[in-house]
Length: 212
Image (cartoon, rainbow, N blue to C red; front, side):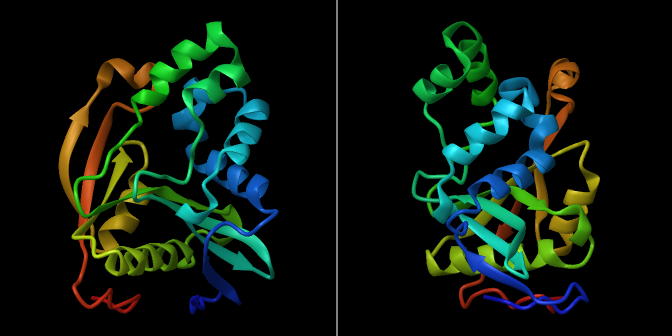
């Protein structure tokens, strides 16, 4: 657990999505990534319940204020990520005819960790507390988990239309690697390039929010 020191007041960090907060977690996730996932999971009225029903609650670090979920960071480790849902679950929810092309779109977002690598699925923070250090708290707790699991590095992908997220990752020690350009998909997915970023895992654990 951690305490935010940036003026948001009593923001506590915990591992795992709290029982009963699955819908709230799905709403935050959709608010952050709905533009990216929309072509595969729209409409929102169907997408949010689908995400909520297939969360792997133990693959998240969450921020709570006054007991309310205000942020989360998902990660992939040991073959499991925050967001789940098998191909058959997608077909049941959306129908076989419409579900098949959705599966193809979802496949575009699949990322598999290298050996001893933790992959972050992204960070979602309530608009009311953005810019107040919550994202940094979430990243540092994920870094602790990566160190505990003896990972060598943390990897994430950031799209070209989200410079604010990229700036946060760079402040927290991530460096940009390969950029994959997909201009032909910009009209469909809303972005035309994805940059992979890495942060090495420190042998003795992260230094925390005061790391230079």
